[in-house]
Amino acid sequence: YGGWVNVLNAARETPLHMAADRNYVQCCRLLLENGAVYNWRCTTHETPLDKAKQREFTELVELLREVDTHFRLLAAGTPILPSIESDNCRAILKCRRCDGCSLM
Image 1 (tube, rainbow, N blue to C red):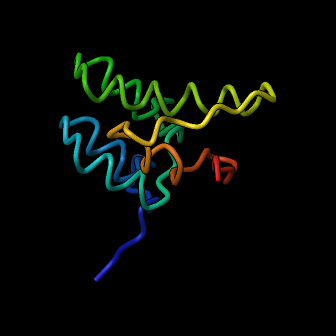
Image 2 (image 1 turned 90 degrees about the vertical axis):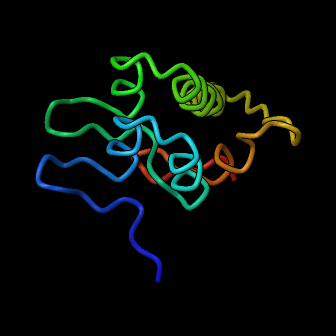
């Protein structure tokens, strides 16, 4: 029954954009755990994090910022893996950047 986690709609939004715009935190985690690109920019140049910040969805902003932090650390050559106890651990490890890179 699966689907493509990075399929684009007419506005070039991914399912993660749409879930972030509606504060579907668990759905966002599930998408990230299945390889969703966390930093894709749609036609309005917004990322899912931008959408969550605009709507002040605190929990979702924290999740997406945590993902972004780990990718920034990787780019700087100092990857620090998330704590196994973190609710976001699987999502962080399995999601992707728009260039296809993952933390795994």
